Image 1 (cartoon, rainbow, N blue to C red):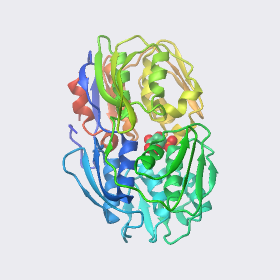
Image 2 (image 1 turned 135 degrees about the vertical axis):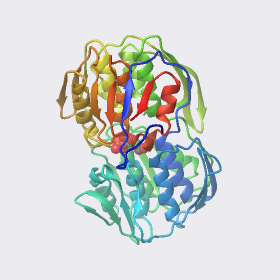
Image 3 (image 1 turned 90 degrees about the vertical axis):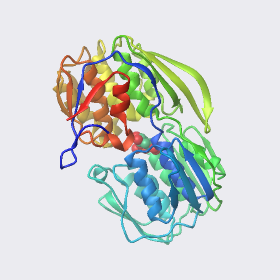
Image 4 (image 1 turned 45 degrees about the horizontal axis):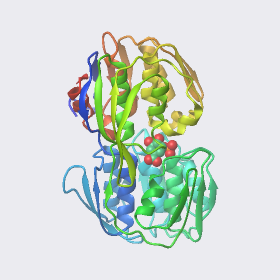
Length: 441
Ligand code: S3P
């Protein structure tokens, strides 16, 4: 990433007003799919090739953890991994802590996977991950027979090996693909059936990928069930471009007059595309072109052209399908005409930062009136002024304010953008290539 970090590793950006945005872009590979592909390939018998792998810090942390557990992973080219699977019982323990970096997905899924191993393991993360709630996985895993120690529900997590797991039927209190996936991964090692019921359907990559790796699994929106004691067969995985990364460009091109952008081969799993629907409700002009399947996932090219946006009352049914896109939706709402109401999104408070607070504080610093609620916000649209904001070390907050800078008069200074590399390496170069004016300072 361009720009110079100071000795503390801090990197600030300034996003200047610019545009129109134009050109054809391919955003990096999907983060959720990349994490899962590594884990299932590691537990499979034989070699699996992953193409379109996200070269982000989060997914590289998961690869490093698996390598520490004895899995040989080659990088034949950037965005590719060749994983020499060790089989379901082939991982080896290590005395050193396993560092998941900033990745909640990495830590929660690995906790499920490690609960069924013969050896003890300790999972650690960075400052942000160390503040994220883990009881949502450790409690149901404990009822499967796992023994996991934590610092009052926070990382580090000490996973005891050698436990006999038994399948459970678990109704998730809060919709979460990470929790569902952790239980399913533990379920591979459990006696009997593990069944997960969700209050709202969430992304089903774990279920689809388990099936692709040959594990018998029944699933439908909101429900998944498998039994332990089978084997995973090595399989090649094609990772689609990450809709959550495309989201910044969908909003940016919608906001900047004269823009016309084409985003190639974006993953359109229906559990991820809530923002597309929300933006359309706000008046956006987004065309879905050449819908096709790639690696078992729906993908399409997305053409987005500038259109005047207006505020909406966001249908709550869309919330789980756009959970990572709220920071950039808040920016769209601030720039739109009229006000936007978001409710039913309390989960935003326990992401990489408290995203309701991070966005509300940042938008207020840019002159936007925002009323916070415990589970959302009321955002008064009408435009943004120049100013300085903090990302709170949150990659999606940083990129969202980079989008905001495009439509201010004097630009936005964004504090602490280093973590953009966790999910979107090369964001600055790609953004500047299509018309942003983003610089590191
Ligand atoms: C993810 C699930 C979501 C999402 C996260 C990735 C996944 O988290 O916010 O970025 O890959 O399963 P929750 O399961 O906490 O909703």
